[in-house]
Image 1 (cartoon, rainbow, N blue to C red):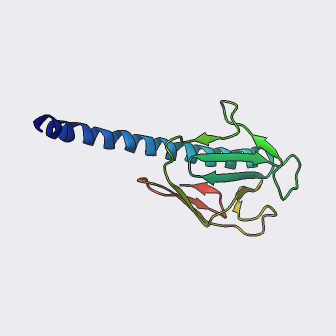
Image 2 (cartoon, rainbow, N blue to C red):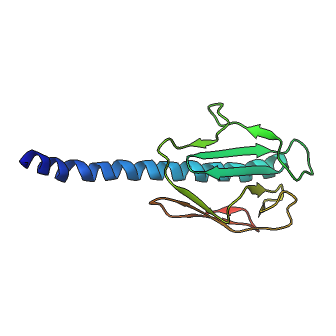
Image 3 (cartoon, rainbow, N blue to C red):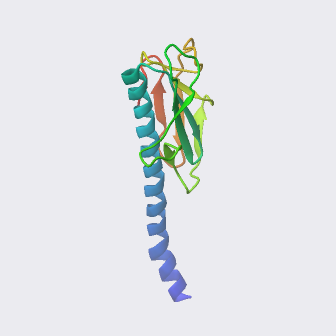
Length: 140
């Protein structure tokens, strides 16, 4: 019993630290992917689409400009179609939900045509939410 008590006192706080690092790492991956989407849209003067889900972030790009849809998968640095991956299934929420469209002019919209700039909040369990400002494309 004493051994169990000591392990609970010493080991459990360290496990909390490990889970916190995983969550922070996943948040950093998502933030980096969103910043990359913004830079690609402006740099290539093409529409870039971002699909977020728990454990998965995918980017795609329009092959022509102007465009209202993305038809080319943008692979991550490791060649995977998923730009960011979290095998731990840390909960990710997005409000409003749906694909994010990074326009060539820097705005973030809720539609590929670019008619509705949208502010978005991306929440990750245990971490501060990422805020995206639609009119400027700023990721905070």
